[in-house]
Amino acid sequence: MKRFKNLTEQEILALAIFMEEDDGKTYGTFAEVLALDFPASSKMFATMQEEESDHRRRLLDLYIDRFGEHMTPITRDDISGFVKRRPLWLVLQSGIKTIREQAQIMELETRNFYEKAATRCTHASTRKLLGDLAQEEQKHSAAAAGMHKELVSNDQQKIESDAQARLFVLQIVQPGLVGLMDGSVSTLAPLFAAAFATHNSFEAFIVGMAAAVGAGISMGFAEALSDDGSLTGRGHPLIRGAVCGLMTTVGGLGHTLPYLIPNFHLATGIAVVVVCVELCTISFIRYRYMDTPFLRATFQIVVGGLLVFLAGVLLGSM
Image (tube, rainbow, N blue to C red; front, side, top):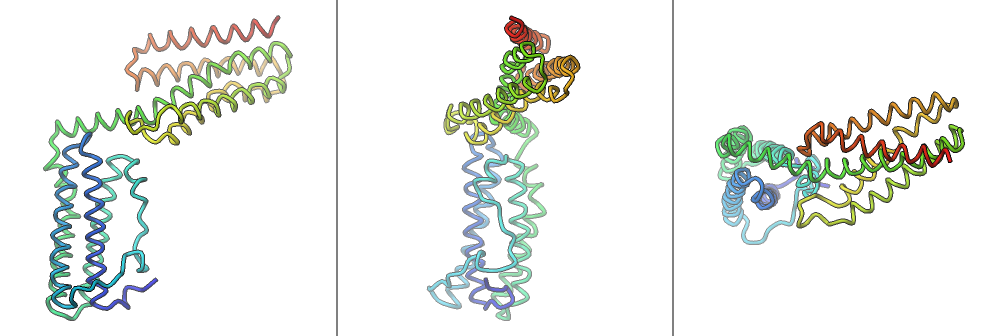
């Protein structure tokens, strides 16, 4: 990789053109992705894309005037010292807050580049343009928050906040809750059936672990294969599957781990307490994120869990 201090003025201009092209494409992608759910922020990034396009045009005019039509092939990846950017797909999946933060980082990095590049150039028109662009990028970086406030009204901010919350529920809370419910409830019967059939803590622990891990793998694959998220907006299937599978396993492990205690009666008593805590936690999550009245959510979960628990105890006692 080349060091910045060794670049010629021709290479500096070519690099600046590439950076403006790359940033403009990124802002255009941000604007396109956010257009449906976050129209005001989409407008903000569309404006930034137009500004980057203007910078690119001015740089190209100067480059052609000084060095002709042939462009020196050089990109930011060829130069040491630039911050390695997160993959664009990862930024897009991380939410609107991360997208705005990424834009601010891009503006700051570009401003620093222009400030240093201006000091390296001796040609008057090149130095002037780079200095002017550094000032404009500084204004853009400082005004990013102000631009957002100007383009996004209080009502629009509430709409965007509500939309982001809905996406979070669809992509994270919903598959996690499904997994937690399945892991906490479905593993009750095999665990307590084994416990009351053997009255042996270790054997009950093995059965509980097998049920929790097996249910986690099964639920993870089921959630990941349910849909690819392209039409439902539920997010990447691998992320949903991982969240669902992990929470399923966690739900099953909660009341299984007490059976590491050799004393069967003590382990069973703690496991029953853990089950109560798990069912109350699930009820609260449904109340908090799924708009389910707390008493109704508690009744549904507790009754279902109690029936599964009794089924396990009954089968284990036969």
